[in-house]
Image (cartoon, rainbow, N blue to C red; front, side, top):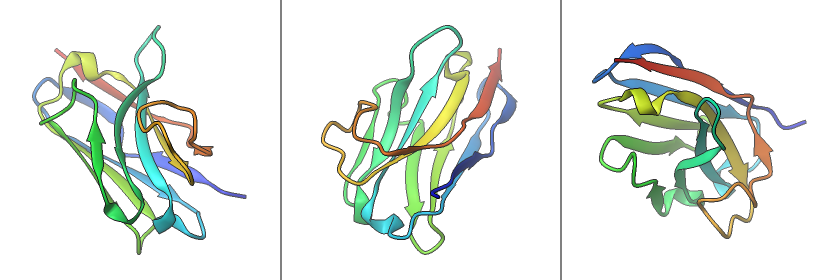
Amino acid sequence: QVQVVESGGGLVHTGDSLRLSCAASLLTFSRYTMGWFRQPPGKEREFVAAIRWGGGGTYYADSVKGRFTISRDNAKKTLYLQMYNLKPEDTAVYYCAAGADVRLIGTTSGYDYWGQGTQVTVSS
């Protein structure tokens, strides 16, 4: 059974940095498109960032572009999200997702596996 486990969330202040990690027990991790989504309190889940398999191509939501960096270590089967200059509006549960055939990178469809999420709270 595939396991996707996020870690690294926490309570930080405006302007702080945080790095999220996602460990996925996928046999062929390097062949999966990996993404980060988040769900703010009382809102729908939204796209944050994604990286194509093989490291080819990274994508970001406009709201995080220039502040967040997505990366992957295929040898460790781990996905990362480095977040800088955090803002209160970044407060959300952050989810990691993996998809073997993701056509629409910024939507939840096409992602086959999801983690349980990790809470990020940014206080003003």
